[in-house]
Image (tube, rainbow, N blue to C red; front, side, top):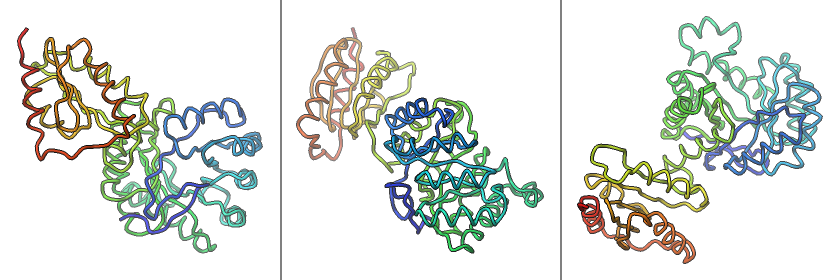
Length: 376
């Protein structure tokens, strides 16, 4: 179920029906303000909406006021084991703090952080990670790790609620995709608070993206989750790109174009992978949301891509450009990509008006099929 409560991290609403928010974490030493700001800039360009910075030392906490002032997006301080650093982060004006109430020094220390956060109107992120469960839950974790994650999260929830604090979001992360999915589903049934989704330590981009798409995507399809971080062993900007692709694929958010492309196979006589790479590279320049289809075969692709805003279907020497289910023109293969983007640019300049669609895009599909089959 979707979260009932909503919190605000800076000017960004999370939960309670707000759009799913994309976040990431810097890899720099936080006290190196120049390097950290450079990375925040790269993350913002990629579409990051919240950024978390590690605060393991006093010098990192002392850099927070400047980072908060300079950052174009809300800054979250990530703190473990040291309540005094959490207090310094709150004083620095961060948009939120991420703490684990179980390792911050006991209930008294948690109370100090809670009171400071209350006074400044700063929310928290709490939650459990399968790699750092407390000792009293290890036996349960051996039987059911997902249940242990949820119990740890609920213990933290009960502690904060006993202090009259309700301004927080929760995570129950695991590197196991099935465990992570089960834990979030169980937790969503028991709490009204916003949930932060992620497969922790997902791995390098190829495998990590797949694991995250399955784990995070499955939950989002269930209506569970309010903010996401894709934890990759990579440049954090890649995390943001993957996060947006997941949201776009599910139809939850729009940011930039979506490309549809048929797979390579023995029927392809135009080198569709080359066409797709050329189109994808050009599409990175566009912030507008629209769909482009790249087809190299007359069998399934043209009909399946009939709902795209624009598309190309190549033949040996010629190809078709189509828009909104209708063929625009036939052009030589050597200028196919250039002509496609000329039409896209013209459409954008004219206000991106989408005409009323035919019930079926058969005319376009049939003509593109002709182009793909035309002999030399």
